[in-house]
Length: 93
Image (cartoon, rainbow, N blue to C red; front, side, top):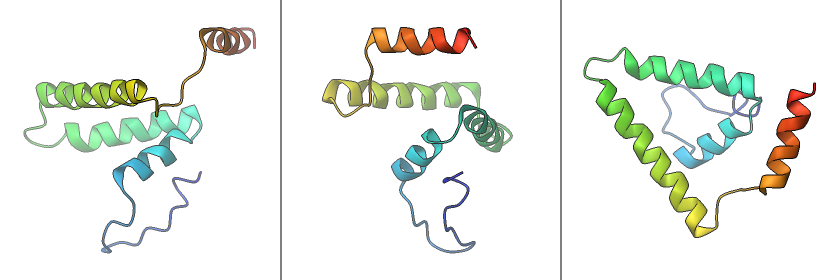
């Protein structure tokens, strides 16, 4: 809910960087992230000129950014054992 509680005012200059908004979005529960992602996708996919190629290019940029973070050591990562354990606990629920 932190993302939704940001103090943004209409018609005011942008007060948060893209990275700050992105991090706030990452902190949302999965169901809310999916709703937000869908809403953002709809906001650009209905625009004239927002082609599949442009959307694919945007994803390519995002993938490159994430790979660069991993290589730089600034990305939050976890071990394969931790990931496997987390996935098992989700599946077992």
